[in-house]
Length: 290
Image 1 (tube, rainbow, N blue to C red):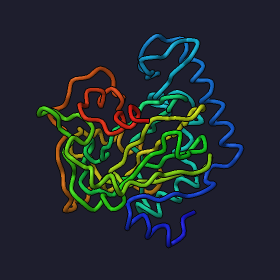
Image 2 (cartoon, rainbow, N blue to C red):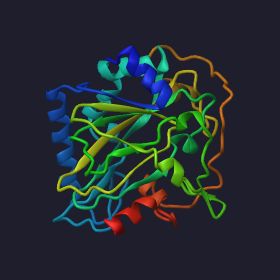
Image 3 (cartoon, rainbow, N blue to C red):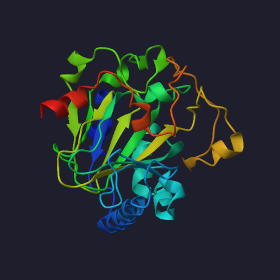
Image 4 (tube, rainbow, N blue to C red):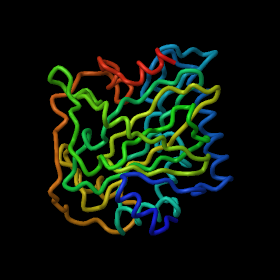
């Protein structure tokens, strides 16, 4: 699914894009299911365990920004954990045995769409080694104007940035990264394409300035020998997360770690809620100046 050049590009830069991994029929089905959930979200007036909505959300104008735990909401979402094309890419980048860490869906409603502040996934969930990545399945064309994910190439080989504000883990980078952001690259593609970014790669996404939704399904995946160091592991449940290959013992690697404690107290689990209190947002400044 990936060429040897693409695999090397991922190793060097911390991200890569693969084309046409999701077939047109699969894509049409996933989009229809997602459209139905957007319509259903109009029945809620605020965030729930299923729907995380923007503050301006109404029944007439649904503003769904995250569908929580999609794998529990529809079997066709859960089936992605066994998708042969996705598994092939994961094995090329992580090795023969891979566990998932769950499925997420971030949506950017048209004419605004909240940003995801600059962060490293690794800051949220350090493991015994850093063979972790996130696959992003593009349900829509991802363009320069609809809030594409931005990455800073090579940052997966560098330090873990400061994600603390007022002594608490805030879920977003709080140190000065102005020079790093000069190297930021938009990750664009066609519906049905996927991207993969390393858990330590610095990334974020701006507002959606287009007139259409931008929807991404995310699978967080890890090599089977990468074990979490901030979570209590139920072995039986943990082994049920295997996507391919056999469970194995943890491998300890010399990688930088900053624990995400103590954390800001917030309702719910959405990254949008976690990052809402950020005092200095490059993306919000961008919208003001747009």
